[in-house]
Length: 207
View 1 (cartoon, rainbow, N blue to C red):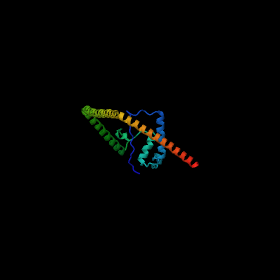
View 2 (view 1 turned 90 degrees about the vertical axis):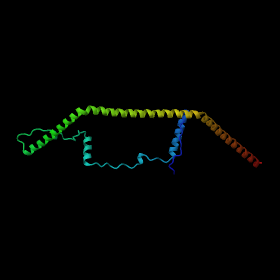
View 3 (view 1 turned 120 degrees about the vertical axis):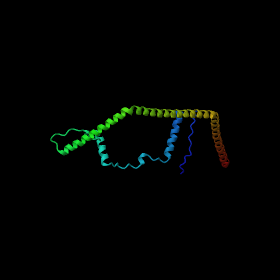
View 4 (view 1 turned 45 degrees about the vertical axis):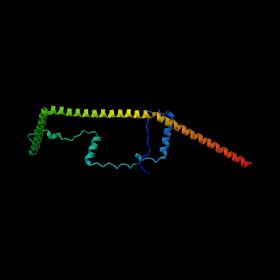
């Protein structure tokens, strides 16, 4: 079976009248009958089930933490604490305290450098960033306005095109209805003549 769709659905909102409740119900019943006659489309129930998830131990631990609503402890803040060692501490404990003091000093020095840079260049960087965002917003607003204008122009052109052929379409519709009525009347007359011929043939055979 070819997958090319040959059905074309026309929409003439400026010519066709709004369907009545009875017409809408009749159309919906025809659609339902066609859907029953057509092969069922694949649905989510016909799809194979998803395989069970497989997470790494680290991801499983993180999911368990989220499920238990525990706070995230991704950064060990104790490495930045520089509590002085007690007088009775051992040399390894003193060396560990010294390493923590070096880490804290490096962190504070980096923060201080960042604050100096922020104080010197932060305002200008913030203004430049805002200027870039405003320019992007103006560009998007122009594109949106152009798209809306194109939609309005397309709507006007569509209505103008339908208004220009509205009379012709109504005439063709009336001619089609008259033609269908004439065909029905012809079939009724032909059926009547056929019955008359059959009745006369039956009468002749009876004599």
